[in-house]
Image (cartoon, rainbow, N blue to C red):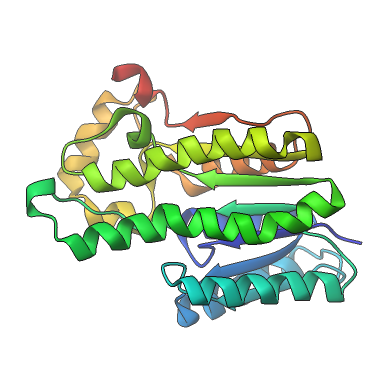
Length: 256
């Protein structure tokens, strides 16, 4: 019986790379995102890759459509995910909260609706999803939860006040929930990436800005989604790590 990994925000970028990494290691993978077109495309890509690599046919690749900023959507989706796993007489082994949006604006120029959207998508959704899906882990007395944050949650950044606040909130949430669930053998950790080569990064930053960051990153380059996925898989399958904030940034945090 294959273990199960649920990847919130798994239709592209870091989330997709995480799903692929768990699939490569014989996990059932369920991708969750609000964009149906991207979800179908990503699930199809994983299935083709899966069969090309001649993996076991026992592993499932599934997806669920969910707008994580909408509370009712989240509740319905989590109920479906729990039912899906229970129907197969399996369990939720790994939950990855990777859904997120960025916002590059000075606070004085930021609309209230944008503030709520970033906080709801990046922080509130992770708290609610984890609350609803971790109950299964508590019952089975095993499981791993990984939240995807950002180094700006620890260090801040000009023009990313709201985004930084949402990621800083994830740090406190991760550490507190790790304490609450440790007695049940459920681990809660967080990955804080630096600058990673994704569509979101490329859309929010100009090529010149990326080049400038490459000059100050000690490893002299931005990271890949696959490198973040490797770190997520490590934490997701480690049985004696909890409450950890793992930085994956090429050493950029050393420059703050």
